[in-house]
Image (cartoon, rainbow, N blue to C red; front, side, top):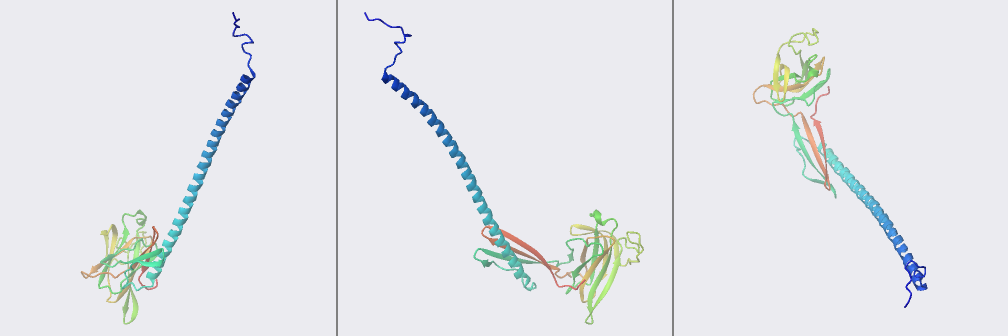
Length: 287
C-alpha cells in the first residue's frame, strides 16, 4: 500500500521545473499588468490636462478674435456716424432735415436726422445761467411784441441763497443800426437785491411769486416790450446762478424762432451701431 505524505512535508511542496517556470512567468505578468494599468491612468490624466489647456487656449483665442472684430466694426460705425455729422454741418438747416441711408464703404453706412429746437411759445436753456454769465436767445423773425422772462428755480437749493438778480438786454435793428434796450430786476421786485445791496434795479414789469413753466417753478418774472425788429435777447445773472426761461407774452399766437438744431447721426457696420449727437446753435451776435 503506497505511503501518503503529510501536506506540510517538504517533499509535497517540491515543484517541477515546468511549474517553476510557469510560476515565475505568471508573477512577472501580473506585475507587468499592474505597471501597464498605472501607465494608462497617468496617460489619461496627461491627456485630460492637455485637452483642458488646449480648449482654454482655443476659447481665449476665439474671444480675442471676436473682441478684435467687434472693436474694428465699432470703429467703422463710429467713423461713419462722424461722417454723417460732418456732412450735416455743411447743410442749410432751413431746408435740411436729414438724410436717407448713406453708404460710406462696403461695410459701413449712416443715417442723419436734424431736429429744430426752441421754436414755440416758450424756451428754456438746458442749464442754469452761471453767476455773471450770459445766455443768448434768437429773436430774429419773431412776431412777439412782449416777453416774460422767468428766473430762479425754487426747487434748487443752490439758487436760493442768495437769489440771483438779472439784466435783460434786447438787441434790435432800427434804421439799419443795431441798438440795445436794457432792463434789470431783483427777485424781490424792489431796488434791494437778495444780498441786501441797494442796486437801484427797477421794479417795473417785475412780479415775484410762483410761476410754473414746463417742469420748473420760477420765483420771479420780468415782462419786457420788444421792438419790431428784435434780433436777440441776452440774460445775465448777478450774485448767483439761476435757471431762466422765456415765454411769449403778446400777442396771442406769436412764437419764438428756432434756437438750435440737434444733429443725430447713426453709423452702422455689421451688427454694431454707434450714434453721435451734436447741437448747432443758430447764427448769433457775439457776446
